[in-house]
Picture 1 (tube, rainbow, N blue to C red):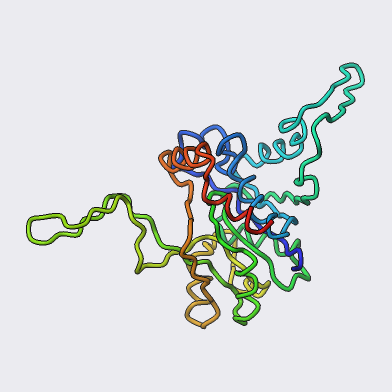
Picture 2 (cartoon, rainbow, N blue to C red):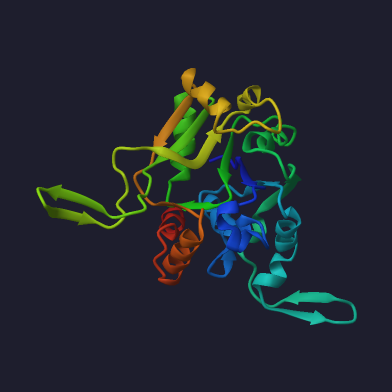
Length: 266
């Protein structure tokens, strides 16, 4: 499969996770000992997509610093203090093959505006992948790309079932006959945030203030140019502090659902 470019939107303020994002951008909020951005990139890399474009905004310099110092932060090494010469002691990670392009897309740009600012970087691409820097999944990304090729659409979005915040009761008379703690809604589909697009999307984005999820996607849908790849599996955003705790609990358990994707794709 071609090594398509992967755009990750990393510039938002993350106001619903203010406990963490007051000090760092949301894509750097950790799951275990790695930021959620690394988990997302690792998922794409497991399908062979290792050419990343990070659309930066709020505290984007911290994301640059993280990757510029990645070897030092994630490996054992020996430092000669006088010359500042560093010798790596740990084996080189697979991430050494990742190519990462950092683009400042503005602090106040909306999602469509951030993508618009990447048009020059994406020139000549037949298609590219796009996601947000705050959600993990066991989605088969390769299958989404294949679906996009077959669909003939300008864009394909992954459709997922939303998680409900509260337990669902099935009631008969004055008795609960079924109780399900926060079940996913089986009859509703929402934007799962993993897209495949062609550069024709830029014809639908007017300015930095354009919200991708509003007029551009609404117009594509009205024109029959927005396909959906239905994903019945795991999907979890990190929108709130509660979400962050859940993702870290799943990681610590050793059975984080999104890891199964890496293993299947290997």
